[in-house]
Length: 353
Image (cartoon, rainbow, N blue to C red; front, side, top):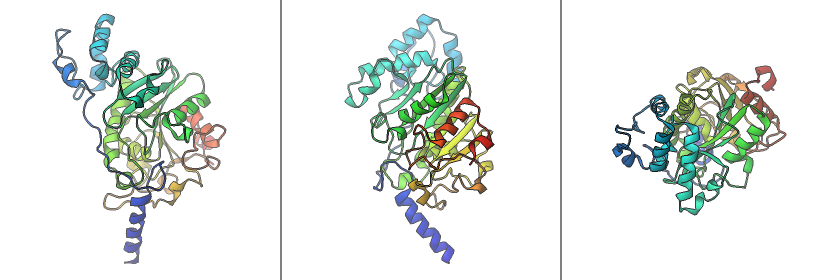
């Protein structure tokens, strides 16, 4: 009976504390963005090439890549100009085409939230203005990179907050930019805010509902990279993003899964993730996430702390990371370890404390 009572108390805490970057506030329930990109109806009806175009909802990234491989430069350009919102978000389409498509879509966007994203020179690999907005940005030369990384952020991230200056190293572009700078030549890093994240700290953050949808979107996005001829990435998963990565792990093509400031991956241990990727975990002792109960019951909570030795992940030193948003701060042991993983040069002895 006492054990049951402790579990109930733990989950009462979990519903009010779990995973976010906005602090100790109540969260608003979010409707996960699903389905194909905006403009898909017009794309499906278009016969400008004399045939059906690959369905953005049903075609696999590999099928999309094969379709574009069979097109001439002029045909690719025609589709880009007619359907920028589809091409820019079509996993498996050539990345150079997606950059140009999203540049056009952003230039046409009237929403002031996206003005910074339209800055010339930014490499926007995905842009969906629906709802709170979703975006992915590349740092480095993705086409020539020998090693690729994807950063998956946690709560309170969307197209509007993407470029926030407060806690910049905890924002998706800040994490990706500092990781790319530390990893050095031959690498590229993608900041992927491509799923509907929880807002604040509430039931959304304590459950896997949004993460389930996010896991499917992340898997398809990464499959699109590999279908376009890019190497399998190392995936860095912060906070609630680690829940997304945990649910995606069994089907996600990745060399490494790196979780930091994680409330749990909805798995009891590494074996339960069913991944061939190497799993790493970091948690700073001053991170408030350490106060979140490592439990899972009746759909609430995310389970075992990935930094618990019993979980079986390789431990990354993070003693100097300073809080929930400090893991990518320049000069920290955690960033040095992340950079080694991003370069493919990390060893368990080199990264573990």
